Length: 289
Ligand SMILES: [Ca+2]
Ligand SMILES: [Ca+2]
Image (cartoon, rainbow, N blue to C red; front, side):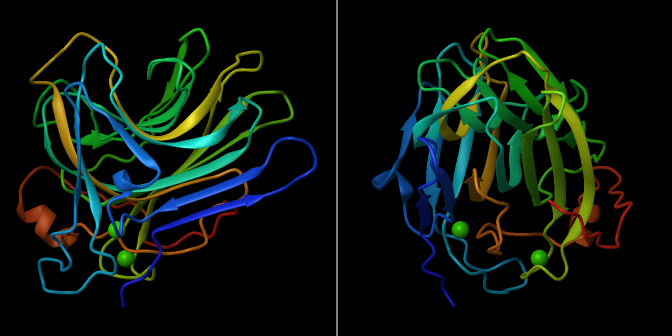
C-alpha cells in the first residue's frame, strides 16, 4: 500500500522562541517542486520513481527516492530544506537516512546533515560523511564518518567501526545532544535494511563520541545533503541512492518506511566479490535512542 507520507512537518510551540521541528521526507513525489531546493555547481540531485520492486519482485512502499551525484568543488552544492529558524550547538536533535552507493571514486564526496545558509559545507555543520572509503584505493570498502565543522571551520570527526560494501543498503541514525560537561555528543547507529519491514533489519553498530568540544560554537538553518568543499575534482565523485530522510528536535523517528531503491540480499552482495561482509551482531539490541 502506497503511503501518502510525503512530508510530515510538525511544529509544536514550546515555551520561549525555539519551536520543536520534525521533518520526514520519503520522496513519494518530487520534493524539489515543494519545499526542497537544489544548488548544483557540478553535483546533480535527481528525483527518481522508477524502482517499486526489488530484485526478487517484492513490492516496496513508496516509489520515490533521490539519486545524489556529488562532486567536490569550491562551490556549495546542496539539496536541502529550510528549517525556518536558526539553531545552535546547544540544540538536541535526531536525524536519519537510508543510502546505497552505486558509483564512486576515492574517498567520500557526500555529506548528510545540517548546514548554514550563509556558510559553506565545511563551516557551521554537523554531518555524516557517508560512504567514506577507508583508503584511497577505489576498491576500498566503506565507513560512515560523523563530523562537525564549528563556526570557525574547525573539524572534529569520528569513524564508526562497521565496514561495508558498495551497494549495501544502510540506515544511519544520529542523535546529537550536549552532556553535563558541555560537550556535543553524537550517538550513531547503522542498520542493515534487508527485505521489507523492520523485523529483519540488523543493527550493525551503535557508538557514541564527543563530536563538538565544550566552548565550540556553530549554528545551522538547513537540513539535507551537501558536497565536499575543496578543489574541483571531476573524477572524485560518488552517486548514491538516498531515501527516508528525517530530522527532528523532538524525538527519534517512530515511523518505519522502507526505502524505495532496490535492496539486494546479503548473499547477492557477497556474490559480487567486493570483499568480506562481516555482520558481527545479528541479535537486535534495544537501545534507548
Ligand atoms: Ca521513498
Ligand atoms: Ca527490512
